[in-house]
Image 1 (cartoon, helix red, strand yellow):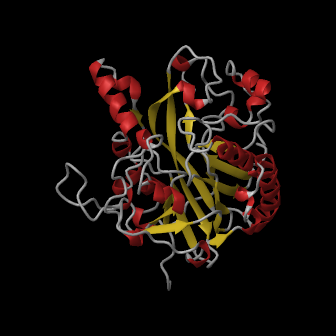
Image 2: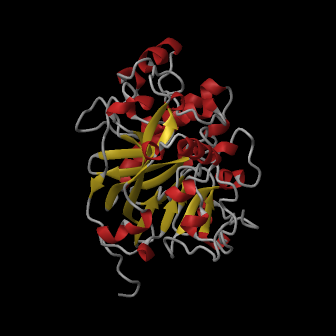
Length: 375
């Protein structure tokens, strides 16, 4: 962990605005009233957000497929023959107009697979895979996050912000750089994106200071150690980054979880890992055995991704917040435009645990090189 944290309030971070519609809703009691307050606030904010304008461009890129326990993906509701599924990690490149009038570039979820493999859960799983000689069944690599941008016409130096919905299985040192060598390495790590700052919720950053046993399996030990504090932008609550881009605080899966919200020509999209497929947010449409039936039995409108339950009621409310913000898909209006940052793969070997619907990737607009200041 860094020696100190960059603790500016969100209205003091340059170019970032707080979202007043959500002020206080997460403190409302009793819990049923809190859910309805979250839903109502999301309805109000969605109208204002959609009227502000759209992002310039957004592209999604598959990074890697990793194993994941099937019982977690759908809160234990699904009936499955296989104990493990595969999830595909996505990286998003978003360009938008900042409130200062400048073009901004955000890279969302640039997962470095080598760092994720050192989280206790995956370290133990890899050890097992080596014993049974099944490594290739567990991981598949598509792209390295530091090599994606040149294919889009950008340099890594052009990135303004980096963010993750939460920091499970992320070795932040491998992304943002470290002033001290990572264990087993001889020199400090340089950052993947030299001019970018990490947007991170204060509660998520604070988790690294003292990890609870219920959180331990999913966080990389010392994953923030030596990361320069000047490369961090720490925020509280919900914030707007610029025209058509917001980060909404969606606690529950982790204390500092936040979700990406973008406005596009097809309406509003939301991305997070609160769910592993569209089925999680709309279980009434699910064809995965058990999901629709169990959700109906318990009278629940969402099904959690439940590998950690720092607060399952908060996560439920957060998923309602997400689905309230999302627009119906013009391709199939039954489904809301929510795209998991790590999505259950639609592979036959996982049957019957395959998504009932997948939006695929996002591809809007044209990524452009920023014009140097003063030009």
